[in-house]
Amino acid sequence: MGEGSEPAVEDGDASRLRADGRIRRHAVTTVRGGFFRATVVLTALFLYCPVLVVGYLSLAPASQPSIPLEGATLRWYGAVLTDGRFVRGLVTSTAIGAVAAVVGTALGLLAARTIVRGRLPAWFRAGVALVVAIPLFVPTVVVALGIGVAAGRVGLGFGLGPVVAGHLYWVLPFSTFLVASRYATLDDRVAEAARDLGADGATVFRTVTLPRLWPALVASVLFCFALSFNEFLLTFFLAGSGVTTMPLEIYGKVRIGATSFLNAASVLVLLLSGAVAAAAASLEPPT
Image (cartoon, rainbow, N blue to C red):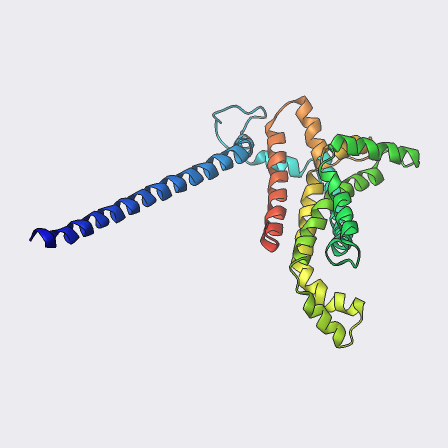
């Protein structure tokens, strides 16, 4: 009886150890999951609380909102959409954003092809990538000052031309690296097969490469538009008195004081920018 009971005791200890291990793993998994969920919630609150507050205050019946609101109305949204200055600012921002998006994506495509598929030494392609990335690390005010000085030297002064140039400078790194990330995933053997069948370089690019890059190109256009539409500092430095965009109009109202009208205008800009960014992210999710 004594000799036969030892294996049973060992099996019981092993079972308890396995059970304790499962309990510890479950506890660790639960704590880890709770930590990540709490981090996500706190990050979302940090990012979007100001937006929610602005949205809440935009519903105030009074022009000077206070918390809590005494009722809710959408009349300030109607006032924004019928205000001539804001409508002109919206049209100007949309036009500049469209030019920056299309031209920036075209230049980004050329830069991406050079970086990923260019028949050049690796150090040269790395240099091109570095040059394109530099605007991401240079303070915007320095970029604006440089463009302003250059525009003055060539006689352009301030206005629409320098503003568009500044926006292109700002969006080019984003379009380049977004398109390059998709370019790097393409299987070059498909293009080689098309060349073996007699297609020239232009035909291969138009019929093989471009259709597979299409989602990234559309996403780049949308991202660049959103970036340009919301750009303030470059526009503030370079616009002079002849160009007024939506962010500049909002800034002009901010200097007077926060009002329900201004909150409604901010919400409309956020909704437009958010919709464009969401459409772009659905086409080319961040990697």
